Image (cartoon, rainbow, N blue to C red; front, side, top):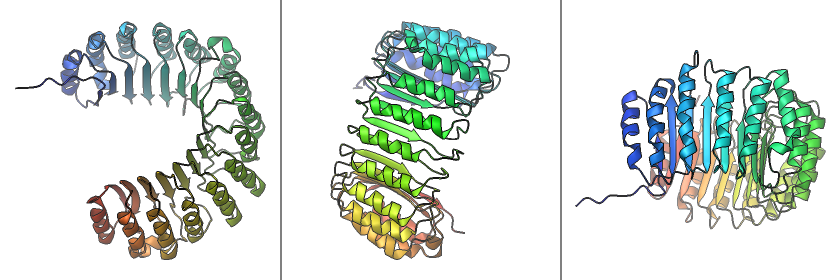
Length: 474
């Protein structure tokens, strides 16, 4: 006798590659009456089937989350996109829809009018709590389009979580001024309801717009999670970023903070301004800082930064990207001292790729630090393109990892490390320490390809989940 399995609390991921696959899904979707989460990916040629799909959506009475990705769409003339927007109108009937994610990756010939029409749909989705909109690679956004899109959030009375990704979008000067106007006009949003805010800025984002954003965020007293990605925003000044960071001190409820400054071309560094903000945010539990390839960082700034980390005693998750920086041994020692005081830390990610530090010194220092982190369950370490690590450093690191009693997952990357290219036997003791760890359940490794390493990985996979990404020796 066949048993009918309900799709309650199930997630359906479906990335159709052909019209036939899309048609098969769309004809059956209404039968999944208990489906709550749906993740779809469409290419341009499959948009013609989207109307049939949305026609069946009202049958999903418990539907709460919809994620749709549109990759490399050709909207030449835009009639196809207009048809798509008309099909989306059916979302108004989904009274339980709490989360909507729409990703547009490098669309071709999309018009500002099309984006404007999409924005006009959002205020009708009254039950929405989370909105995630991602525009990647859209050119020539106009001021009115940006303003309309941002202001559309203001009618969503249940909205608590906003994510906007404008990376690689070209915005005209008037567009920047209208983003500026939006952040001045707090009336679009109820500051007391927003709990999570994530913004990936367009490269055209400038200093006045940032200062108005900072002024607005200051009023979000209920904010518990903030993520700001300034990477490659070279129109920003160190002064504007420093003023923006000073506003963070007022967010007393903030428990999660992510700041990314990768590859910014500034004459003055902003690292020193982060330290006072961190000292004020004593309740932080999750911190992600990305300074990769950031020029002109002074030794005093790194000292201030690492000292401020030591005061975050509630921190459980820490991710530091220090790749491509000119660091000193003193910087490394200060970081190690701070990490030892974070005894609540459950997850630690460190990236020392392409730094000038001696690899063995990093491994030796971290080995002594890890022994103090008794609650660490996840550890990630990247040594990419470090030419000064050898068997001694790897041995110490492996032994320290083996002794972590509750470590369940680890990620190690040694991409293009010249010393390892000369002799993969250097990894022998490290790999066997990983294999003999009693608590370790899952490993992700980036290693040079060799028969020895493949054999070791095969042995480890008999006891644990292992994913190995190999690169060729040169």
